[in-house]
Image 1 (cartoon, rainbow, N blue to C red):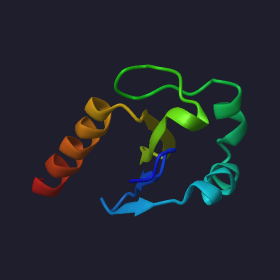
Image 2 (cartoon, rainbow, N blue to C red; image 1 turned 90 degrees about the vertical axis):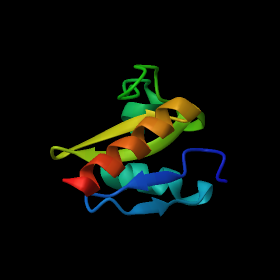
Image 3 (cartoon, rainbow, N blue to C red; image 1 turned 180 degrees about the vertical axis):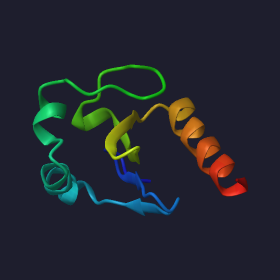
Image 4 (cartoon, helix red, strand yellow; image 1 turned 90 degrees about the horizontal axis):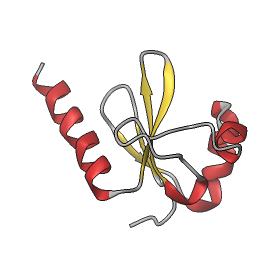
Length: 88
């Protein structure tokens, strides 16, 4: 298990893992790093502030980059959404 925000769900419902050493580069390339450092991003499920240490997943949705925290219940909700999308 990757400790610091290591998951990214892609538009095609594939789960991609990101190593901790590459997370900053990924966030910079997505244009999200400064927003996270400045505590401007929130979890799409519980509305908690996303920090590097609490980042659970990166979720592209409706042309925007959104995030979940690393709380188990929020990550489970993300899994539930992925399963619903597959059945459509």
